[in-house]
Length: 117
Length: 115
Image 1 (cartoon, rainbow over the protein chains, first blue to last red):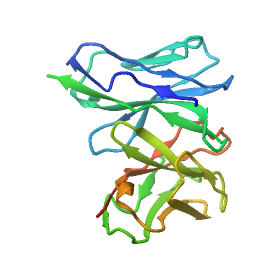
Image 2 (cartoon, chains in turn brown, cyan; image 1 turned 90 degrees about the vertical axis):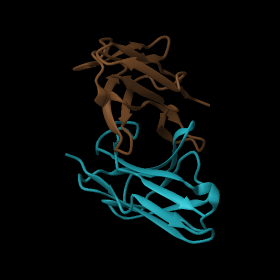
Image 3 (spheres, one colour; image 1 turned 60 degrees about the vertical axis):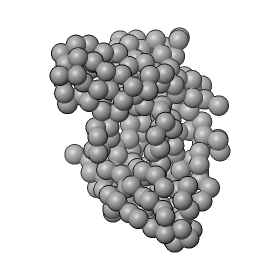
């Protein structure tokens, strides 16, 4: 089965430091989008950043950037100058095929990020 | 801004009850989704719909059904709730004219407890 793997269930980082969250995926699509979502405690899931697979340039949104390695099917999220508001569960997402043969977005199991003041 | 709302933030039901979870989006999105979120398992797709009255099974449809009578509303139905359906349920929608695997906008979630 096609999967999305986040190998770090929990991570912590000192405020103002940089942290990288890992994600590997497995899709048979040739052109696709990859996503990182953030879910703060008891709050709504929101999109952090998206990467279009055919673009070689890594996406950047302010303090958030990705390291996209298409051949390795790796899609890590780097958070620079970490802030207390970055504390959340982070999910990466990739297209896969469901058990019933439908195309869908599959989410990883998440990485809980703690910011240490 | 896209707004996806869910009818309840918290819900407590008894085993065997029929449970309705409602989701409404206000941006004329064609694609809508229901997920359940459990610790250590991430988000798992239950059902999705790409148009009114259309539905497709996700990865874990057993024990659930859905209804989409209007474009803006997508309901998840637990015909006979069981304790293993205790979970956080998330609704999402995604824009028209995009692949079903494009970016999704999420509601706040409904935490359902079945006792």
